[in-house]
Every structure is written in C-alpha cells, then in structure tokens.
Length: 157
Image (cartoon, rainbow, N blue to C red; front, top):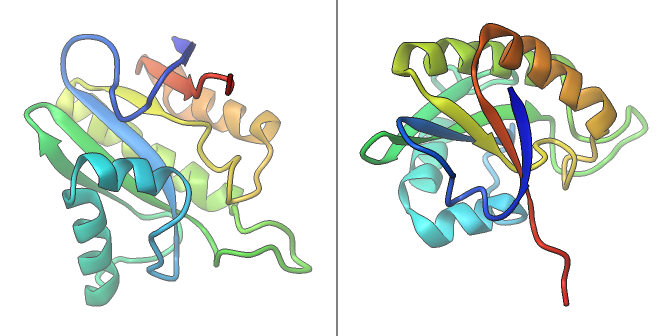
C-alpha cells in the first residue's frame, strides 16, 4: 500500500519497525534539503553518510546504508543522485541508481519487518519527476507488500 499524508517524514506514523529513506548525492555533500530535518533530529545519519563517503567502501550510485537512530527506526542513506547540479545530461537524479537503491531497501525492509517512510524522494533538489519516481517505488516496495508512506509538508500559511 502506498499512502500520502501531510506531515513530517522524520516523525513516521504507525506502529512497528520503520525505515525513513532519502536520496543522497555521490559527492559526500550533506547540508541542503531533507537532510537538514534529519540532522536536526539525529546526528547518526549524517555521521554515517560522511564516514561511508570517507571510507569509500561501497559508496557508489545505487548503494544504500541503514543507520539506526532509535529502537526499531532506521534512516536509509541512498546514493541516487550524481553530483548536486543539473548538467547537459539532465538533473542530478539517476533513476537507475534509485531503482537499485529501492531494490536493496526492499530486502532490508522485509528482513526487518519494517514499513518505509519518505518525503517525495528524488523530486526536490535532485530534480527528478515524481511521475517517474512513484512507479519505481510501487514496483520495488509496494508490489513486495511493503507499506510505504510519502510525507508532504503542510502548505505555508
């Protein structure tokens, strides 16, 4: 099931184990967009991402690492963005890398018995089209029976 709610993806709804996922770039840069909300809640996702980048071990497009931030709550750092700016090749999002990330994430979610929570991944600073991203989420997560909740921030007053 794919659900849309208005709210904060760093405060996931529901019971049981949960994974919050988001798209990271392949440059080791952290400091704009949804990551600011993550860092405001927990230091571990940023620390884990930066350490992973420094180590170079498996840090590449399509890779995902889970960081536990609370009991039964993980943040999935997914490398689905090449660079941080659009080029003549297009926006930074790499749909094939996002597909591989979500495939790996699905395995983690099944193993943990977790639901998945996210903002509209890849459609913000990464410049992707939600019309292309949503079907990847459906194929990789929803069709495997993993409950997914997408969080939209409330409209400003």
